[in-house]
Amino acid sequence: MRNTVTIFQKEIKSYFASPIAYGLMAFFALISGYFFFAFTANFVERGIRMQMMGRGMPMDVNEWVIRPMLMNMSVVGLFVIPMITMRLFAEEKRLGTIELLATSPVRDLEIILGKWLAALVMYSAILALAGINTALLFLYGNPDWKPLLVGYLGLVLQGGTLLAIGAFISTTTRNQIIAGTATFAICLLLWVLDWASSYGTTSAAKVIAYLSVVTHFEPFAKGVIDSKDVIFYLSMIFFGLFLTSRSMESLRWRA
Image: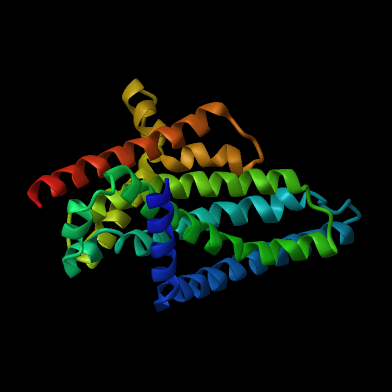
């Protein structure tokens, strides 16, 4: 456990010692801020139109602002996550320090968990920037905070899944660009798998659609926690970290 914490602290410091963390935060803050402005403006405009027509104003801020913003934030995560994971192991291999890790008395699981947790905390910190926007809704409106927390939980679980897969891909190459590109391709594939259900209703199409990360995020965006969605994300995280462990084991043998 102590080794995991040590590696975690090292990775967190390395993120903030370079422009990576600040660049990703600025990028995410800009995009999420735009989405927040667009959905809020649409909500206000629609409310004004309904009042002019003599109808009641749509008071469900969660449905008109928070839910679509969460869905779009998950899309932005497809671009952010590869930038976080591409250096996890690829940078170690490029610098030649992976041999030191592989031959050290530290267990592979401790190395992997330390790096993955650091990446997850980094991603969570980026997501927290959007909390500044949603805080304004509580100042000037009355949204339900429970669906918002559930939505953020879904974002963290989805991010943890893609980060685990990205960590595995990072162990397979020493080139960060290749690692980032491959991670983005796999994340995008897992995102669009639900399209299979649009082209057919066969059992195979349903299985393929079930493997899509967006299929399991939609209930979270609605404020609903379903055990099957939680189990799916946790299983995918375990699977990604398992593959990373097997890849690290092969590196240890070669070292």
